Length: 290
Length: 297
Image 1 (cartoon, each protein chain N blue to C red):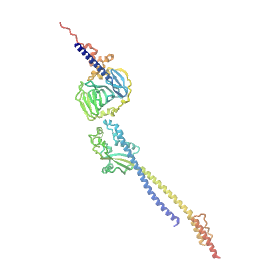
Image 2 (cartoon, each protein chain N blue to C red):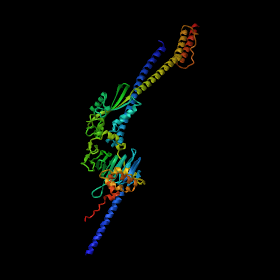
Image 3 (cartoon, rainbow over the protein chains, first blue to last red):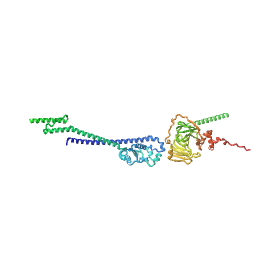
């Protein structure tokens, strides 16, 4: 097998191995970064929801206490406020979602669906569980959800959610007496769930991966070609010429050609040595003839 | 001895006269004293003092006896009493402001005679009385919203509690009802009052929007008293609501008697003189002179 083939085989093997390792490592890193970006987005949305709730309960509701005696204003409910803020955002970003999924809600739209109820029950079963992150498939694609428990941490919650008799009458007028009562202090009654689409960051990660791998392949290819050209020009062609001249000299054709080389590299040294050997051989042959 | 006694009696009687005269002067000055401030005036609102109308402006001082007329649906006026308490009227509304005179002649609860319109009143430590055409409401430290016209009274107790006393057509109050926070009462004509635990949707829907919020305290913004521009005198048609049969009729008959000097006013009274027996005596005193008896020989 010719030298260049051996060289190319080894080179190709090394390139393929490096390509595979680089591909695997970069893919994992890009996917992890994408997921981390999605999780950070979800956490940011969760903090925004909590901020909406706090603003509503500390600044908005106190101003509307008198109005609540005449008609119940859902805008004074922190959960409603947070949900409405996100519903407004969903008009331009429909793939994002926020819900205060509750097992026994006052507002029917907050009732937990099956998978949401499962999350709530996980929180209810484990006091130490403060956050759950997971992925699920939806009609619009893969979605990451971030969930935190909603517990009755303040006695003020029980003003509206303990019993019908204690609850504001205007609230009962609006929502009825069947739902949203019987909550207990420090009970986990639901979960705040933020849903963030994974498609865009993942797509971006995949595009980055493809661009990176394509660039790496192009670099490998260029390197492969250049190395082949250099090997041919600087080694194989010169060695072939030296071998051809040596072959002629070995067959007695002392005028086959000179082993001269202008370069001082290893091939040049070999050329010089072969040249000296030819001279010695010619002199030896002449001595034998005389 | 007798002379000394007569002298002492004369001195005592003179002293009593002086004291009585001073009391009358004090009472008169108290009546004209400032009762509060009109801290909000929107749209067309006028106030009647004695028998003349004045255009009301924010910062004007209130006097007991003011009749406040919020002329149309865009009119709104708020009165903050000096002794505490706030009243807000949404037009069209007509209200007389005063004070209940207690048995010992001290000024008691702030009193509002409501002839028509929406009113929201917040009583502080000083008691307040709302006289609707067919009901009277007494409350302390409570906030109420009421609407009244000639035949219909509605009341909602926003906070605190109140005593709701239906008034019969002849002016006699009936047994009062206790109204608790959140309760609604209604009386139509002379029918029995109806109490409900919650106000009906129709009442809430018709409620002036600003009544859903707490009444603001704005008195501190009016250090200077503006001057009111005097307008025309009250006409008989404008006086009619106050001359309707009821416990307060006599007060207003006395108040509007000077208007009999106006030919137009007098002509209107003459046209329906049977409705104004008090003025019949003034205009036609000869009808009421005792007949001369001819001695029988």
